[in-house]
Image (cartoon, rainbow, N blue to C red; front, side, top):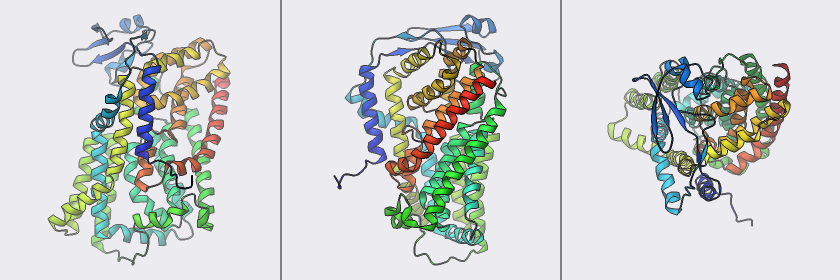
Length: 498
């Protein structure tokens, strides 16, 4: 038994893909009709498995379909994805996925996730270039001296800033770029890599869980629920502050223990391996020259430009990836790296994150199997049926847990919003609570399970740092229990004061 090891992230995802393939043989297939707005033609398109119907884009059409969403939410682009139509669920002939579909799923997932995969690979190349210049080592050395005796500021600052990105514009996939950059900083501060992972990943998780003005979460979910996104905003701001405080306190308690005694680290057995991986062991001090400062400035500017582009200029993966590619080339020019050396170094850097890219693709493959097996809508149908006529005090907590479960099958926040909210939001009317309670349940349930959701980003994040999922679970489970209890209490209180 001592020789048994916890499986790698890739193996875990393939096991999950196999189990989901088996589910398609057990869970009945079913589908809701969907409604999509065609901006060019100014019409709605209703799609079922048997036909496609064009309908006039009017409020009357929406009311006829029992969709309580103002027409302008579609025409102004707030709702830009097809939504499920309430009361249209139909059980269909089972569509079980076989061995061949299981084998193809990782490949299809990699193809579907090509945008984020290329982002990760280009970031890997950029990191390879900046590491080869010595600028990163010099910058970390300078920062370590500046923070000496005040390293805890790093935990507060990183977690809070990333949470701010999460709550405002949905900073999530982009955080993959921060792990290779910030982990060496945490190691230089005499913390372990788990502290760095927690600050980055939990910062993003809490920010998106308690989204305030995030268009991919709060706004699109509120629009799909037929309410203004400002409804319940004050409560979400308070929830963000309290949740962030709990998480930072949890991380700092662990970090303090590790700093005082490194053997208390959950990943102490990997200490040397991780320090070697991130170049934090046996390094001679690098002089922080003007050329290296300029290279590091360009490197940092790439991330600032990315954040500005995503939050203000409607950028997405192509624009982000292009920014990092241009940044790598500029750093190569500044550092006077020969063309052949630049290409070799860039390719080696990209190859370091190839395993991460594959994990992202395999995770997307799990979603492909569920979609092809037509079981996601069935899960949604039975989940909505479960809460009908429930007492409002219980309703909020159960809805939160239901959304946590559904997030395994629909890990995308925007996808979850448009597919589930037209079905779930009207349930609030039947139990006498505001629809903002369902929006909160969607956000908090999705956010809580995101801590450990293998079809989300956690496995890819851990793979960057070479930390096993089992060790992350050991670290995160006490916090997850605390946050779950806290969230359910908050949801129950909100029901009675809203």
